[in-house]
Image (cartoon, rainbow, N blue to C red):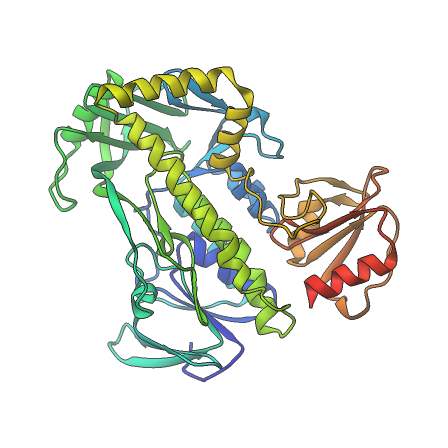
Length: 481
């Protein structure tokens, strides 16, 4: 990556799943992308995420990666949050009615390969030290592996560089919040005895533990001991992991050969804004929360899917007014909702006083009795239940996630692999006009009469029943620029 100034380049900082998906999308759309990463180039096993939810699998399907990722792990069709509260994932209205248990580095491996094939320029061992922006672009001072500082010029910069984001600090944006759990332990181990389930979770007394199978003989263990909350840099040995597991689960399953041991604390924090001028935040740089429900990596990938096509349209001069502002308008409320739901689960799970214990019992009983509550919880945890604001008077589908519907020639998420809008019509529509190259036109496999314009991220931009050519042209002009 050289230091040539350009007003058509996007620099993405951070090569985790969020940054990789975003960079890959931009490059696939024909945008020049540079990806800056502080770490040396390597595939890291030191990752906390292990669950891939249905909505994320749908996004990966729209990029031709989901089926390959499914071969790297095991799936589960139920989530047990408390003793009496379990969620049945098999009822999800998705091609992926389950959660995939696979380590984060498998997700990163596929996304990095896609980004490289699309032409993303990688700069490993490079650290952001300063940022300046004006009306035309952003200057990013980057210290390379050799210690030299080079100024990079870009149209836009995206900070996807984690909870200690250098980009967020460079734009002087706060990260308010609180610590929820002061000391969590993580370990990747082998087990002499195989647990009955792919995901084993329980809490007992002052201890909580979870064991997830990666499907290759390795298991991820996460836990905490309420009576031994120490700093992140305190030494951690396998004996302590075994002790917490035995307390919570009644056995340590003959745990041995740890390849990774780590402590961390869990915070709830969210940046007040996801956009400051030409600089954007996504993933953990924008929001962090408890690991309850396994929503962290998944929420970040949804941020990237929302932002990438909007940035591509802006760089290529075809973005309608306000399109870039819609990123924060749509994703900030989702980040806030994830903080609330995951934080609520942790607080109930850790309940010590009688009132909170009573609340936990009430939540469990209530959720077990009411399908609407379970559907809402499923939608939030898996990501398929979120919708974006729609204009007053818009069709009820506007802003909602469009499922993988059957088309006359295939299915929707195959049609989305071009990174374009997809117009689904009841009959043949030939009026591509100036939108040719940014639009794919498909027909319903059924006799449905609704015309739907699907955004590249799989949400309905516009819909109308029995729409004529004039209505369709107006909608295309409004949404495709």
